[in-house]
Length: 97
Length: 194
Image (cartoon, rainbow over all chains, first blue to last red):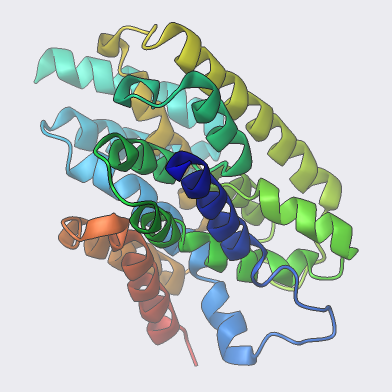
């Protein structure tokens, strides 16, 4: 029973967060300051997701591989190439370091 | 999740109705250790706070879609779907969203995620750990982040968010992520050319 209550609670809470702003009627304008702030949400949140896995995992090969991936992403802007280059670099640096 | 004692069907159900990876892993660990339901739900709320920011951000582009579509799009929000979608509007904060693009990305991600969860439940850890495939996840997020960094305010937002999340990593409930997001947003606003 507890498990079911937990599952329902988790689903409601998560959906409420996702729907919070999306369900506002279209005629409500986003205040200018919030609009400016939202511009930085992708760069800030996405970085907060990947940085710990790169920096806080023991060993240096993650850092080196992430550096290679950043250069590839910057130069070619291709997701698949970035992932392949990063994984290849990870194994290469693991072997060298 | 199954490894921590959750019944396979319950794990699959959580994956479908909650559809948020980090909070599922945390919930599985907490449930296995007998944590009260209310605390598990509260943990889910904190871990998933970033979805509120995605919701506000996506509303700028999709706020004029019919309500039914917006309700469906809310359910399908995920980190990578958000990243892929918002990459297209980096230079155009007011551009109307392309619903088909969002739905295409979201449905592929949703189906792949559910299949992966089902495979994980059925066969467990089938890929050797030495392949280091788990590192593909941060690499994919790097690939989505870097093209966004077009001006110094954006670069500042990313750097400050990265430093903050690492410095505050020991906070419970992954509160480091919303905290880092707020710090990064603040840095971006401060660095904007007036």
